[in-house]
Each structure stands twice: as C-alpha cells, then as structure tokens.
Image (cartoon, rainbow, N blue to C red; front, side):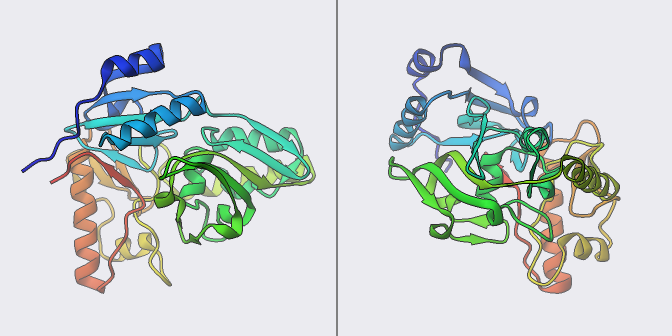
Length: 305
C-alpha cells in the first residue's frame, strides 16, 4: 500500500512565499540530470522565518527537501508529492579574520570567483564541483586528495529539533563524502571556512589546472549529477565499473559514460527510470563480480521501482 504525504496547505504556502512558490513544476526544469516528473511545490525561502515555517510543516508529516543547484539528486518520473526548497536566496560571502562566511545557497563557482577577486587561497580544489556550499558541506565534497571538511571552521544550521545552532568543525562527525549533518540538520544556513591570503595569479592557475583535469576526465558536456557512487574503501568506483565492462552501456538515452564510468549521463531525452535502472544494474554487477556493495552518492527523491 502506498503511503502519501498529508495534504500540502497551498493557501498558507502562497501567503508565506507569494511569487516564490511554484506548483506542479517538472523536476527536469531544475535538476542537473534534466529528468523527473512534477513536484507538488517548489519554494524559494529567503529568511530564517520561512525556514522555520517549513520545519513546522514537517512536524505535520509533510516531506520537505532542500536543494541547491539540483545536482546530486534524481527525482522520480512520477514526481514528488512533497516540498522542494531551493536555497538560492541564501547566498552571499563575507571575509574577515581569515574566515569566509559563506551562505548555503552560494554556488561553488561564485565562491571561487570571490576567492580570486580577494586573493584567497586554499579552496582551489573545489573548482568544477557542481552545486552549492550547503550541499558541499553536508556531503563533505571534494577530490581524491582533499575534502571540504579540511577548510571548515564552523557550520550554522537548524537542527531536526527545530533549534538554530552553530557547531565547530570538531563537533561534527566527518567521513568520506559524509557528515552527520545529513541526519542532524534540517537546513544549513551558512558555513565559516578557513582561507589565507595568497597570490592571485597562482590561485587562478590552480583553478584553471583543476578545471582542465576535470574536463579531460569527466563528461561535462552532458547533463549528469556528478559521480553516481562513492568510492569503496581502498578503490575507485569508476575503475570497478569500467573493469566490469559497463562503460557505454545504455538504457534508453541514459548512458554509463564512456569517458568516466562513475558518471551516468543524459544523452538528450533520458528519463529518471532509465538512470535508476542503470544504477541498480551497476550495483548488482559489482556485487556479483567483486563482492563489493557500492553506495550511491546521489539521493533519490520520490518513488522508484
């Protein structure tokens, strides 16, 4: 039996968000996979009071998901009968006392642009990672060499009990592509990050080199959601998938990239179901061949079967 969320109070949402609430919008219009069915409500909160309002809705059983740029998610073709809250109005950067104060909806590309303009070094490894600061902190985003927790000073968020709090880096549990903020935080408001003064030319060169390496090794010319699976302990998901002979496999217009096997790309008119089927096929194949259980880096939103 399918359990549906309680009815969404459309009038209340319209009163609170006015023209910053959109009803029944296809997910393909705001996700980097460019797939997904109608989402019942998409809102664009702009202050803490509106976030508090969304939290109160969850107390009544309504599902609320926060997203940044729509990367790292796959929304069902059947849509989502909850609320998706886009954080783009929570964006902005300040710098003082060697700390960047970065709001959650700030795009990582804009953050790097601020660093270049202000001669700040230490964040170059984030170049080319899709998404926003909030999502990057929750997922402890990074490269094989560095992760964002290394530059985090503290994080301010609304917790799952409805309390606004700020935690220092050492009060948060960090792991590979993981932080306990995923389970403890309802909404990330901002993060303070450590940055030091550096040479602008050297900073730009590091960013340029990182971007060049990404463009050479990743299929950035197609819609995707970044790496699909986390690297297992002591290995690389992409290498396992490639060695299993899955590169280039297609279901419909969804393809395991021939450039990087840990990417699934939308060749034009893929749907979420085909992407999900590829994910399931990859997991089953790697389990059978190598007895390794790959863990998705992408969050599924809605119903898949």
